[in-house]
Image (cartoon, rainbow over all chains, first blue to last red; front, side, top):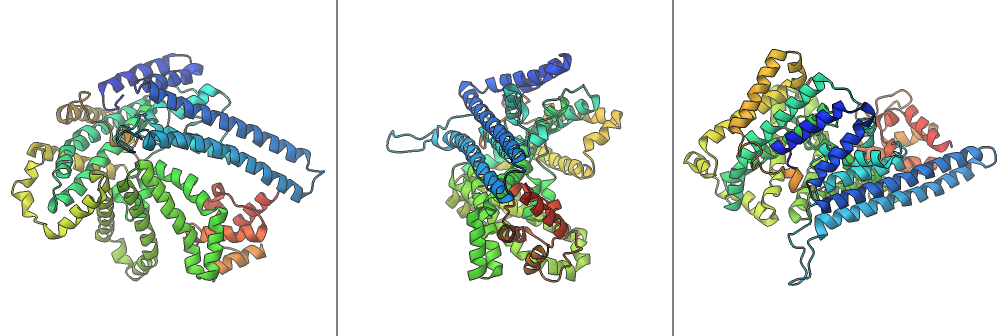
Length: 520
Length: 75
């Protein structure tokens, strides 16, 4: 079920009605059934994989819960009889057993994910090939990550064990977050999904406005610019068009992904569930590291918490640190484990997006840029200390934001071509076929986007920028809730804008979300 | 505590670790230092600081860090 469809709006409306009408103690069952219905649209194969993730994560956390309880009891019972060292040794051995359990759970879910995303197109016909007919399993990346995160949190004793299988199933499969995230942790949604919720007019109004705002970003801006991107890529246009591609694709992915997440979070908000935010004005970032703290935040946190830190602290990395400091000096020794973990984490992030070289290069470039920025940091700090007024001036702050935006736009363009040599080829074409006059000589009008559409897109970008600026301290929708006349008028205007300017007409053939499709 | 201060001083000299409570907030310790620090603490105190304990509140002062070590050591 596409979020940008009448089908979804009807589904959400019926679910909301039933959810607030039934007795409060069964609200969670309505959500679970709603998630089942939502998922049923994706077909039986998708359902089987989701069920597999639910069962594996459920069994794993139950075993871990029992092991934690038995360890606690043993340590209490032996307080007087065993020495501290004996108790520590027992705990370490017990922890290793639990580690094995959680690793097995992670392995099973990872194998399932790898099979669906990378190996299901494997074929022996006409020689060995990985084919292009991969299984389509909705949201497998997201619920797999949610499940793995939960198992690790239970292993770390940072999350409670949910004993009820169906409540556990709801936590893993809560429908709004299945298609494109956010990747929530048990601490974010676990308890919220257990308690009852009363209808709250403010939450419902703000949630609805957020959904409409998501539709606007997706249908009026992102989908409208998509044909130009498709044309530049398919015709392999270079020079100034490559720069246009970088900029257009940034606009598209911002509108598409943040718009989609607005629909997701807004839908949950109407039901009284607060999902974690996934974006925080990413294009205002002054550095790549800051950008990744503001863009797809739940994915970044997931990789930091469950890959980067555990990897940095493995015994191998600690040995590498000691060896490096002893043999290569403190500076290099300190960097070795962290830099190795950074590169591996970014490689994994790239592969999570897709099993292709363009994603590998995309991941490695991101990691490399972050490491280079980190190395340049002392230089920046010196500059900041030497010229504090200049540093804090609006032009210099804007320069840093624009620099980061352009750099990230350039790295992101690897998504478009799905062909690394071609991407580099088109990039270098900027230096030998750059002719800005191409644009004014009518070139920009030949990209399958009309002049009127360009104007609508430009206005959309201005509106998105203004809303973003007005939401720094508090989301604009909350400010508007306090001014009902203005708020309702703007909501009506937004509806009209979507219906009139929405690229393909709401609900007809609105293209699927990038993160809900390619990066499922 | 002295052993911990020594480890911290080997990392960055000239900081008053007895009183400083903003080691993370002021950027005195960065991610490179944290991993080095944990490696040295694991060796010196025979405790394993797990990833989930990498929180600013545990690393902002020598006192907080020492409390973490004691907590992990006492069972």
